[in-house]
Length: 274
Image (cartoon, rainbow, N blue to C red; front, top):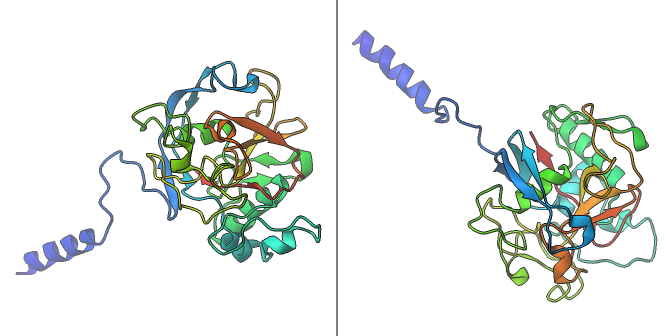
């Protein structure tokens, strides 16, 4: 009887633990999708010159990425400001307002600050240090950060799980997955109201443009992140197009750039964790 009670106690304790097989990867964090490591062809031969040449890129480590763009509620909970206040009293108007709408009118520098503040709030190690053009990223930190450009495109293209190489993030029909110039009525829309891609990620095409970590330059040139997470340049990469853009510019391979201090009605971000 005593042996039975010992065995039963061990079984009950084990039953309360998550089932993890040997060598299995951890589940994604709440609100985030797991993106596997893998190799893919980045860019497009049919797009603009800044999407060329198509080249092979390897994502060496799996990561988790937000299923949705950072919302106005998430921003307010961490930063304490609203999208109206972010306008800095400039007469820009609004492009959608509400808890479930994507946050916009956020500079790259402010997006980095959000990542660090949210990390601290959740007891995680902040990824960023330094200031201005000298900001560095510790990609091994447990906290939130912006995706690299390669991580962003790999996630948008389905992380190797899409049955086809879609033009947009999860479809060859922009209207299925994107709020863009033809259907947005020139406003943002609540996140997740268009179809997700095969990884369960929404709005990687359209809604708001999304900041990436990288300095912008043409593929194959000098603006490349060094091993310590620093880089140089004048503009940061933005990806995914927005409610303001025509269909060709919300494709998964479409690239853009903006000054780290720029704020626009159509520019927001999403976060990743290792």
